[in-house]
Amino acid sequence: MKSLKEIMSGPAISGYTGSANTRDMVATEIEHRWGKAEVKRYDAERNCLTFSRWLSLGYAPRKGEKAIRSVTYLEQKDAQGNVIKTIPRSVFLFYVKQVEARKEKV
Image (cartoon, rainbow, N blue to C red; front, side):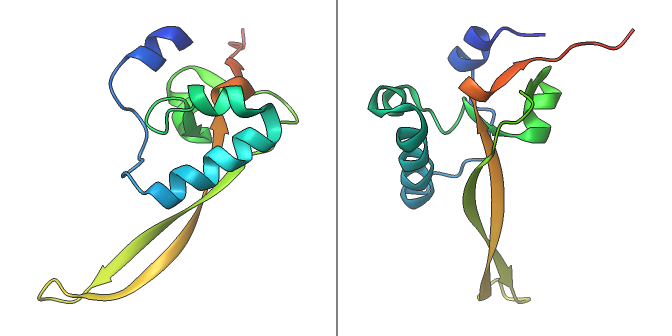
């Protein structure tokens, strides 16, 4: 299992696609919960991940932690590749301050 420091300094591991609106939405919630200093540490590609992604890295949200809600948009296309409609999909993220190393069951 990698340490949190190794995860933060490594390659991008989230599904973040570069949307400024999504980044701002999550940054606003981080500022509300932990203050402006944490917004400077926020990296959408490395330290704000889904529950399942944290589990795959050997970490889990602490009991009682509430997810940060974000939105991503899926595009439905026709046979020619034209976008027919855009479907909003909720994504629930956990910031690095909300997780801890998983305890293995014996």
